[in-house]
Each structure stands twice: as C-alpha cells, then as structure tokens.
Image 1 (cartoon, rainbow, N blue to C red):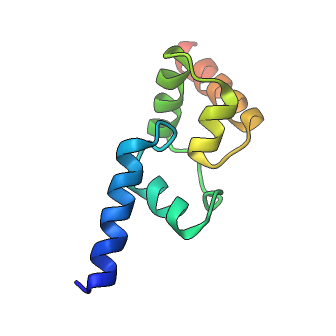
Image 2: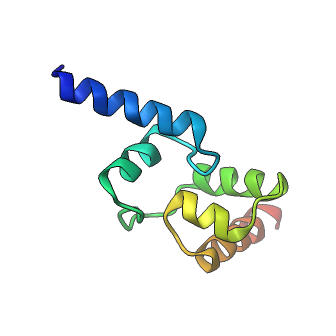
Length: 88
C-alpha cells in the first residue's frame, strides 16, 4: 500500500468516525472523492431497514437521503414500499 493510499484510508476512517451523516466506509470514500450520489442500483433491503431505523431515531428524510445519496422523496417512497411489502 502506498503512502497516498494509506492517507486516503485514514481520511475516510476519520470522516466515518466524526460525521453523523456518514454510515459506512463506502459513504466516507465517496465524500472524499466528491461524489454525493450513489450509482443507480437496485434498492437493497438492508439499506432500507437501516433507513427505517434512522427515521425511528429521529433523523429527517432529507438527512437520511443525504447519507444514502438519494432524495428525501426517494427515501420516503422506498420506506413506504418496504413497509407495505413486509407488513402485509
């Protein structure tokens, strides 16, 4: 591992530790790279479950959306679909 790569990893770790809106190392690396949006992909049920837990802890849809790189409306829709699918 080069010195630059080590510094990059340490910076991502520091971001993940101090930022309340960063929930994973992947999110921290994206912040370092200047990417705020995730690549469009299928909704991961584990991500949606984490979103629901964060909402229950008092975070807003906007805060959750920023953490996951999606809009607040997308967070709301994803959580609504998940609950409808899993409560029925």
